[in-house]
Structures are given as structure tokens and as C-alpha cells.
Image (cartoon, rainbow, N blue to C red):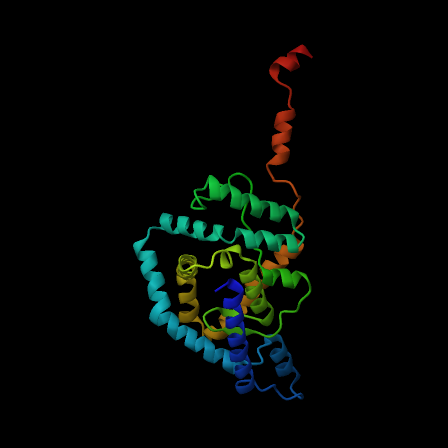
Length: 276
């Protein structure tokens, strides 16, 4: 089954689930004669909060029963160095999608960074296990289709808490689908081996990302009076920060090390200086 066919089955089911949740669990707007409550309701922008909270509770049960124990075991078995190399390896698979989004965002320097990161880390970095590109002047950055849509002026829409995926919005949900379709690894190859490798990569990526936020998420769920509201706020702040950074970025289109290298190469040698 191709990546498009798999996605075409997933998206309608997700839309149906969200539609059923919208009909059955809409938050009641406050009365119009309470301007403070109305302002807070609009700022929260969570019209299906009852449904979102139900999904959050289901995700939380799944996380505590299965996902978090897997992440804890992953962190306990593998030393930090191995986990870092694994994270680098998995992240290298995302460079093609990142580069496409850099182009769509009209960020030529970032597109060059993404391309060189993929080429350099895939070759010299042994498939991306070692992040040698950063030392060569091509640092990593954030770029995905949700950010691209935001820079194109697409509004975020109301807050959504998606099954398994967690905090999101209509714009980010569309962005997830776009990233999936842009990913060459999702549609190159159609045999069982390719599909199994894809599932393994997806599962390992999820466990790796969960392991990296164990401590932070434990603090939120253990100390916050309302973990759902806290996660909603933190997610929005983090996402807006990523979008603002991308919007305000004005890096030159040449690597940071290039001017220094040119200055060094243009210096006269001792012999030529003597002759002059």
C-alpha cells in the first residue's frame, strides 16, 4: 500500500473522530454580559474542551501504561551517548522534508543548511549517527509544514488534542499530513520490508522523543493544578516561538564560516609579501 493510500485511510477516520467530538463535547460559551469571561474564552480558543480533555485522559492512561514505561526502559538500557547517536540518526531521515519546507518558506540559507546536513551527515556522519554537519557550519533548525502554513498566513484555528499525537490545531493537523506526503521515505518502496522498517522507525522515533521529555512532563503532570491547561499553554508558547523565529529569521545565504575562509585565503603569503 502506498503512502498516499495509507494516509487517505487515516485522515477520514481522524476527521470523523474530531467531528463526532465537536458535536458531542462543545464547551458552553460564557454569557455576553460577562466580558472578562468572554475574553478568556476567546483567548483560550478551545471550543471543544470537554472532548479534548477526554482524549487527553485516554492518551494519559495509554502513556502511563505503555508509552512511558517503554521510554523509561529505553533510557535505562541505553547510555546517553548511544541515545544521542540514535536521535541524530532518526533526525537525519527528516532532513528532506525540512529542506522542502525551507524552500516553501523562502529561506535559502536554511534550505542549504538542511541539504548539506543530510549529505554530510549521511556520508561522513555514517548515516546520520554523528552530527558532523554542525561543526562544519550547517546547524540544525526547526522547519515543518505547520510552520510553513503559518508563514503563509493560515490561521491556527481552535486548540485540538489529538489521539496519540497530543496538542495540535487544525493547521498543525494539516501540516502533519503534508509532512507525511512530502517525506520520500513514506512512499518509496511498497514491499513488506519497507513497511516494517517504516513502522520501526516511527515507533523508535516516538520512544526517543518521549524519553527526552520524561523529566519535564513528569514535573508538569505532578505539580500543575490542571496539567491539561498547562500543557495547552506551554504547547502554544513553544509553537508560537518556533513560528516567530522562522518569520524573523534573516540569515545570509552563505555559511557562517565562508567569509572567514575567504579572508584567510586572500591573505598574501610570507613570500609574496616579502617580494612586494
